[in-house]
Length: 408
Image 1: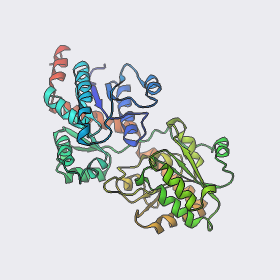
Image 2: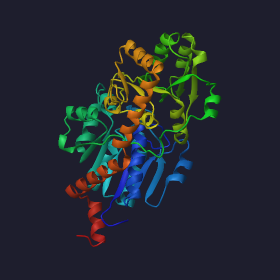
Image 3: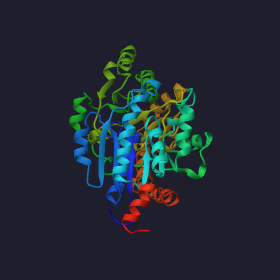
Image 4: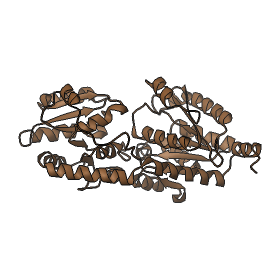
């Protein structure tokens, strides 16, 4: 390891190839820290596809340890499953002697991280994505445990102003909150000609393509897009709606498609790997994910909007959660009221009927993500946070390592 750099340990309930914006964020931040000198160890769970992913991504400076099983939910019955993560995390902490401990999730790994901080006297950085707070607000015991995790951290990384506001609301010291929005890898997402074979695969000829790339989760708003397109189908140019993703609502959305008589206009593409996503974005003309807030289940930011913009596509998002930072209203796309179906109908109508508007918003989105959302700057911000918390609270393991190297 280079002089002046650090050993970092990230504890996360899941990690790539598991889908989700927070997992993508962790990978891009820590892989870059490892590439520029830090030693990173990620302790997480085994999920489908992990062997191939780890084989491709691991380096001597970036290691992934997968040994414990994830909890099914956050009920008391799952508490025994904390023992596995706690033991694996303790073993990793003693073995790798990190300078800074990072925690990517609240339960159960957040509580394990607090325990490690206290026992091993390591500085702790915890991540918050907005829904970590809003989804636990109305539970009986979880807010107390949640607040314990965030209040115990030396630094809390928030992914948006929305998340910052909620952290301050529950009493986290503003001086310990650091906003790092998600970034965008321009070598992964970029404009390219639509793949004719991909269009042919889904029976798309000259139709415009509306696309949603997201888990089939109620908060993503797939049903709202279906209802809006059903209202528009006779007064806009021919279109196909391509739904990319899998999840709990698959059967429900297929039934709704049939009920709205949209079978010939809707394609369920299922899961698509990260390596292929750019081809799908470039097949689209409009990316629509009118996210909603469902009892605290809210979009913390919305990385898909940046990814679509990076392919030069206009976007439609819900005016909810952190999406207001991901989409610039009337510039890179439209933000619609989650409770007003008419706004979504009108946004889709404008984009489906105006070629110039689609191109202008797509171009502006592309320029913005290239200008403002690079991962390297965000990794640099995280390195500065690591240096600050390590200096202010040098843990026992860190002091031992510095003493052993003669740096006193």
